Length: 287
Image 1 (cartoon, rainbow, N blue to C red):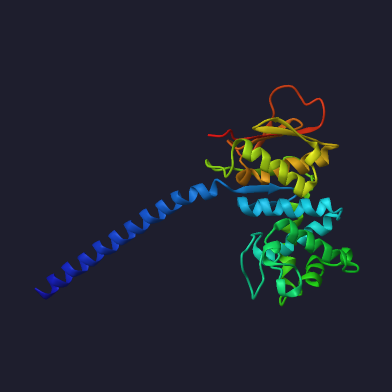
Image 2: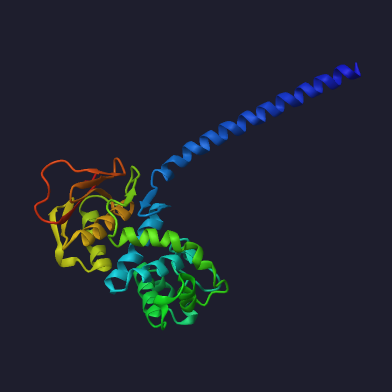
C-alpha cells in the first residue's frame, strides 16, 4: 500500500510539473507575440557595420548628428557625441539619473549645464555638449573615450570607448556618407498624422538642420526638400526615416530609392527619375 501511494504521489507530481511547463511555454509564446509591436518599430542602420535601435533611440541619434552638422563640427565630433550619449543614457532622454543628472548626456544643472527643462531638450543638450567639446584642446587627435571624458568628467573614463564602433556606423549614415542606410519599421499607430505631422516635421527640420526656408509644402500630407548634393540628400532622408515613428512619416524618396513605412526598407522607386536632387516626404493622412 505504501509503495502504491508513493507511486500515485510521484505520478501526481509529474503531472503537475508537466502542467507547469505547459503553462510556461504558453506564457513565453504569448510574451513573444506581445513583444511584436515593439519589434516592429526597430531601426536598422547599415554603413560599414550594423546597428539596431528602437524608434526613440534612432530619433535621438539623428538629432544629435544633425546638431553637430549644423554647428559645422567634423564627423569625429559626432562620433564622440553619440558614444557619450550611448554610455550616459542609452540614447534615451532620461528624466533622472545619478544625483541631479538628466537628459541624453546626463548633464547636471548643478554643474552649470542649464536648467533641467533645458537639458531635457535634446537639441539644447547636444549643442551644449559640442560647445564644450570644441573647447577641449586637441580633442580631434584623442581617442573617443578620452575626448568624451574631458567633457563629462565621468567616474568611468574608459566606458565611452566601447561605443565607438556603433557610433561610427551611426555617424556615417546620419551624415549622409551611406546610401539607404537607415531603415525603420513604423507601427500601425504613428504619433502624428496629417497636417500636424507635416507641420512638426517642417518645424523640427528647421531646429535640427536650419531648413525652414527650403521645405516646400506639397500638400497637407507632404513636402519636398532641396538637396544641394547626394550627401545632403541622404542626411535629410535618413533623418526623416529616423523620425518616422514620432512624426508619422509614411514615405521618403531620394534619387532612385524609396523607403515606405509599410515595408520598412529602401527599394527602387517607381516612376520617372527625379529631374533635380530633392527629398520627397509624405506623412500618414489624418484618420
